[in-house]
Image (cartoon, rainbow, N blue to C red; front, side, top):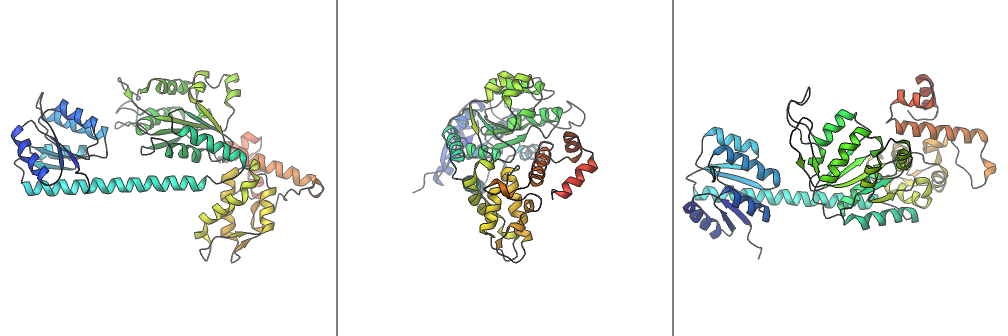
Length: 457
């Protein structure tokens, strides 16, 4: 027999609690009662109530405005709970405000017992459905992460093992490695295997936003704090409360913003832009970077105190060129993922020659490049089920390196090196061609010609 579902009945009228409490108990629910706002909050914090029946006019002050503030506080503390407002303050303005704040329903006293039971039943059914959906989503994410963490090479398995061992703790994790090695995927694995797996996983790329926008995105802002701030914004630290915050490309963060992030990490208190009171959050931090933070410390571009704060455990993901034994497994995994791109809906297979070409390639773009390569080949291979070397983009300008050095010309080596340098610069500049040309010392037109030559358009 399933246990009775718990409800929290909050009303200062003892007679109301007695009558409707008995009604709900007879219907098979477990009812916990509270007669004022402090005792209601204490009960709510102590137990996971999926449903609260709440009177707005409660002691100690008995005002509707205070009741609405209490409603907002309950919903902020546990967004998944349903709150049914049952109050004698039944004018339309109060009911609309309660619904706007997130109440599931609003009932005016005196309440028809049959109506109350139907509303309670439907609210709990909605809670059950939402929790099942969330459980399914988490299970799918966990399965997806497990499936995508494919590999058998010693370096890769060592990195995954270390990440899984540290996941159960709240230690910060620093994931290092080249662009495209799967740092965010490993961060998600840490989150999904942690005690916070039911909480949010909030990723943010620190290199994708200018400093002012990144500060607002991380810490939030209050209405009117700057031009365009038309309403309060919580910020990603607050969104990650109870879960994991993933700061990708931490090395791109400016020194002034590093100071503010350090304070938030050390105290758990953050100050939204324009606010005069801090907000407390509880987050598990995972960071990632492709930069050499040790060298940045020596250059004075990264704070030493922040470095030691984020480097609880460092996990280095090896580049794909160090995972030769993983290439066939990863290629098959990506080919299966993009089977829907094939004319017959069946995943492509790798010929022995294509597998040798993959093994000989340098993979400057790592997993991202391999995934793109498998998608491209799946589309362009036509009716052939088995991929051949000519289906791969890099075999036209960069011949596969043979096991002996005699089969590769100097010109091919130079072209391969140039192609890798261009791809690396594109990654660093987030595919901005103007910035990439400047970084390489080329004109924009010169870069475009090289992109066309190497099939990087």
